[in-house]
Length: 259
Image (tube, rainbow, N blue to C red):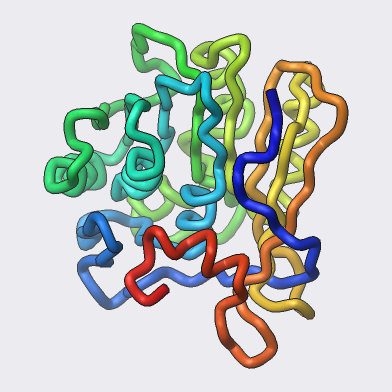
């Protein structure tokens, strides 16, 4: 089941670039869709784009749940990649949910993506999902902003890791899998909690900005299915001259205008 999903990453060392695209801009233009983001606390980021481009959509995946839809970025990236999937994207913040609806309504995949507004912990989902993807709030006990919507998006106050795991347990098919993007230290907290609950790590992507830099983000895949060995990949974003690496270019070229 867990065969290679089409991206062959070299095992390189590198650091992660964590900046928000066009923070001063109200939109970010991709090749096949546009993200308006002025009403969203979390803007388009490099790490989220990597997660959306890298997360495998295996042949059995028909229904996807995007937890914390934000601008709708992950849902739109997955819909572009696979014409057969149906996506529910849930968002707690009403401004972000409204913006995600507008972004999706303006896309070519509006009939396959539904934005749900509400708290994922008690939302009455009617079906289970083959894939759950999330770029969740991940700061624990950290200094917070004076903006409530940004705290909601960035900090675990409204969605703890244990709450998120319970949602995944309740709403994922038996043969399904979950893709989560986290900073390097928080990844180990997430991994320990899942393994305590009988989950298996099946694949992960470590992200560095450059070869000599530390790993800053991990995209991890977990399932209840048994596997022979964990796949491990590393992605370096830029080479020593500041140019995008071939691996990064191959991964994001279906999306970025300048690749």
